[in-house]
Image 1: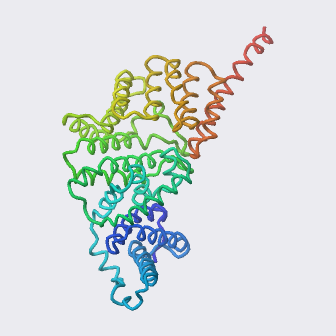
Image 2: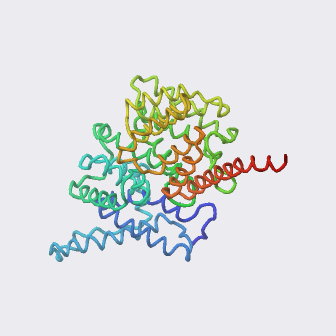
Image 3: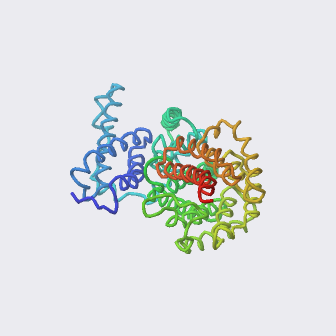
Length: 430
């Protein structure tokens, strides 16, 4: 056994290895649903044993071995249930040495797994949810947050998706060109959500989860290698790079949030910005403009500004208005309202937000309160800004976001107290 490296916590290692192991086990045993269960049990076993015993010399092989043993147990039970005990010796697949299994690993197993999870037997939302769990390693709670639904609802959706995969008997293999075309929108949506959760974690004490963001970028690079002429794949990779470029400037020394307008832009990764801009330029030259290209264009406008006050907000507003026509949705409306406020004033932005109060997907969501708080502060209404900052803080499961929102409310409260005290101090001096 090897000691756990402080630079690579074993939880991150498990998240990185999980889709690789699932790809191997699903391909070897040709049963995705059971393989997913077996790999989950192997991960649980590792989570319990590795902290005390240390990480094995070959952690991937260890997980494959444990998951394969569990799969054999499942197959034995299935054979017994079908009353075919007499043929166990013939039908039960032998577990080959881990070294031989690993030698046969396909480096694109994770991408194949991703496309398989986006099978047409599933609804788009179920396919995305299942892939976020199997490939992205997100928890049910994190996926529920991304979809703006209760955790119990998402748990049922994932369970039904696994049952549908089992019933469809979809083989574990690389998709055909036609299958790639049919499943690509769901695949890109999954990669986008994995990156989004890595860039701004919805749950926990850390704002960013670099393992998720890096895995999303790696998988998107793989998708681009598979589909080099697809403009939306290039647009998504550009969006990730242009956004990830700001990572080092987004938090302070204690992990506190630093908003875009306050960031030290000298810390932005210029290589990522250059690569993202080149990809976006290439994608836009192909003609039809899609969802991810437009979002990448908005990110590029932000990245081009040497300082916050140089940001071309009219151009960003025009891009959001186009985005609303291409891919309307509550989060687009929310961001469009911010752009409206920056161009036409906070009152106009607040007016745009009223439509979201009638949208069940975002009504009562903490992000809506957070944006309202910011716009009321811009308007000079400190009382309403404080109320919405506190409501937003109560609604988020992210500790850094909660701390930031509470700090904003406290700052305004202190400012209000200081302002109220000034007349009395002036009178006493005179």
